[in-house]
Image (tube, rainbow, N blue to C red):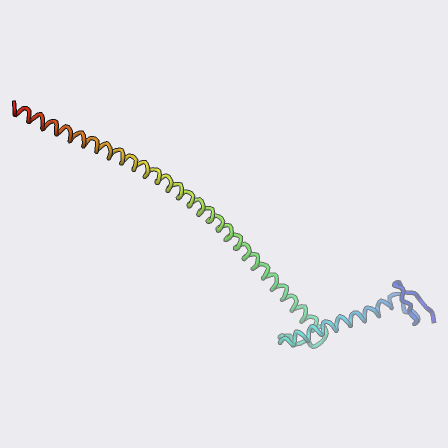
Amino acid sequence: FFFFQAEDGIRDSVASRGLGDVYKRQGINAEYMGIQYLWNKGNMALNQKSPFKPKSDIDARDTIIAQLKADVAEIKQKEKDFGKLHGQYLDIEHKCKLLQEEQFKSERDSKDRENILLKKIANLEEDANRLNDSLNEKHQHLKETDEELQKYKLSLIHI
């Protein structure tokens, strides 16, 4: 027997059939494991009442690939839907902020108008009180003038 060292350090005790034999055997083992994994996934898909019924390892692989593609498409659609909903949310949030600012401005303007009106009312009350006082003075003056006129008339009659 000849011992050859493979590139990865594994010794092959069988006469070498070429440098890649070690790798080929490892590939067959890895391929078997991959097929076994895919087969198990295919069986899980069948257990989930999948419409696909694999007839061979290739069919099982194709079933899994088809299912994964469908999952990817569904995820992409959900991402699009999320993007749309997120955009709508941001739009609503922006509108809400604008409405809150408008409400705040409206309340502030209303309060300012109320203060202005209260000042006008106070000024009008002061004006009304002054006019009332003035009217009372004039009324009093008219009463006094009328009394003097009556006295003057009486004095003219007695003359």
